[in-house]
Structure formats: structure tokens, C-alpha cells
Image 1 (cartoon, rainbow, N blue to C red):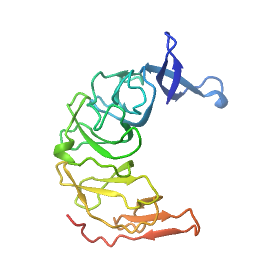
Image 2: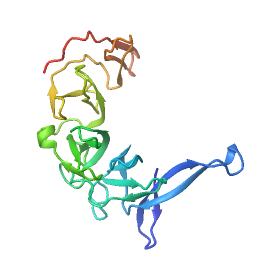
Image 3: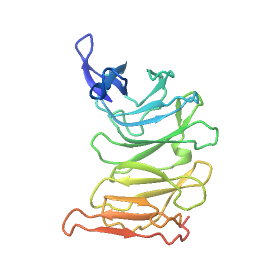
Image 4: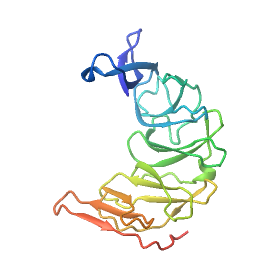
Length: 252
């Protein structure tokens, strides 16, 4: 967790803390907090636990909130030393797509280029929550990352609804993970789908799921490997709907 604390000089900074357990006298007294690394920054809006340097220990990626331009500009990588203590890997994340005030909204990890190191996908919006950009970051094989978005997921600048969540899902059933991006806004229901060519390069598919609500999820209802959709409407009438996939090939 992250919490605000006063630094020795009286300023405010973000502290990275880990919740754990130990037996200190009974079930009612098992929780405790271990203070880790003072990041000297105000806030983070996304996170992902993933082993970025292949030492078998999960590290922590924090997506920057863009709210402290004086203290720092970018998202960060914290390396786990194997005992649950995390330290900042300096300069590990490249600049944000639009400006230093961009807000990271979600982070996903996967090996996109087949080198057995975890790469990242980060969803950003501007500081005013207008516009969207999905950044594709490739691991240098040391836990630091380079920006390969232009080659792997080309996008144009947009003032559209921002992406609030990204997920991996094999939408075209070809054995690789495609990218599904959920948009924030009650007027925009269908997610964006970016199909993987098998080498970690993506292009957007033109799809109409017929989803009637932002509040939806994909799951396999019948055990046939299909991506069925369940969505709910919260304004009257309050109903739950199911859309079943016919397993027809997606347009490429």
C-alpha cells in the first residue's frame, strides 16, 4: 500500500508499504506493516506485481499519478531483494506518452517478444482525464524498459474516452494473448480489442459486441472455450444480459 508521511524536512512523500503476517500473540494481532522505500512522490494510480529481472522474486511496478511534477515525472520499478524489501531501480521507465502530468490507469505484464522477460503494457490518459494511449514497453532484460509502442501498437493522438482497464485474452483463439481495453463512460460500452500477430505486435479489430453497459465481463459460460459476455444495467430496468460467442473468426 502507499500512504502519505512527513519526510524529515517536513515535506510530504509517498511511502511504499507491504502488508504481511506473523504470530505475535493470537489471531486478533496478526497484521503489521513494514515500511519499505520512501519514493518522495505524491501518488500512484496503477500497480503490477511481476518478476522483471528473472530472479524468481516478484517486483513492483507503480504507475505515476502525474500529481507531483516537482518531485518526479515517471512511473517506477521497485526491485524485490528476495526478502520482501523493495528498492527503486533508477531510470527504469521511459517518459510518458503525452506529458509529465499523464495519469497511469492500468498496467499489464507479459512476455511479448519471446525473450522470457516480462514486458509491460501501460494505459495512460492526460491529467484532465481526456484522451487515451496504451504504451508498450519492452524489457531490456534487467528490469528497465524501452518504449516500442510505435512499432507494436501504433496509435494516433485522441481526445476520446480514456482506457480504465486492460486485460489479456485470446480473442481470436489463435494461441496468443490479445489486448482488451475497457473504456470509461456510460455512452461507450464495447471494449477496444487489439489482436496480437504472434510476435507481440497489435492491430485494432473492428468489432461490435452489442454490449449494453459499461459494467460487463468476459467468461466461458459453457466450457467450450468461447468468450461469452455478461453485462448488467443499473438504471431502470435493472437487468442482467448474456451474449454467447458463436466462435466465428474475428475480422483481421
